[in-house]
Length: 189
Image (cartoon, rainbow, N blue to C red; front, side, top):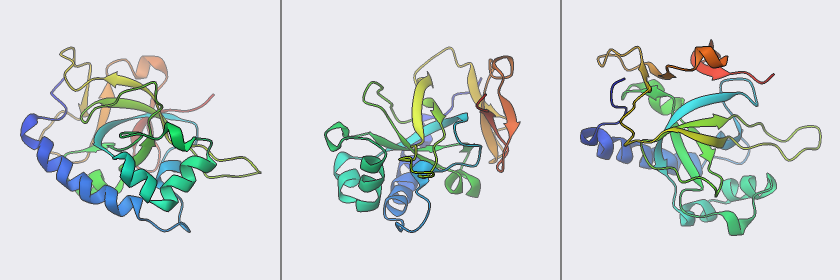
């Protein structure tokens, strides 16, 4: 499959999503936090590409985000640079790329880099007395510098901007294409 994030457009994507994450981090407490929401059923797995790693200072200084992390069970001491990332589900530079991007919590056991393809488990806001769940990285599916490239943007036509991440193994593993934004995801059983 084609390289996912070329070095030529890394800086462009970094700037666009840097501006976007500031807006996402500053969102109102009254709205559904982007780190606890998605367009597929809660608990589902889906793919995204890491495009921005939030610095620890931005996470801790943004009260709504910090409070959401802590109320979901994350200890402040666990928060570090890159504990929250912004990840895109669509490529390349179209309006859906920004609108559908999600904030995702990265457990301290993983080290995500900009350009990595990640699998995330979708979260939900608190309900029925529970803490809620964060969109959380479950694994890194493909590192940015991985030469095997079993994953890429579907369809592979570079002229299109509404392309979604797809890996060769997904259909065999029970993943389906659907949801509000028509992405590949694996529903909870």
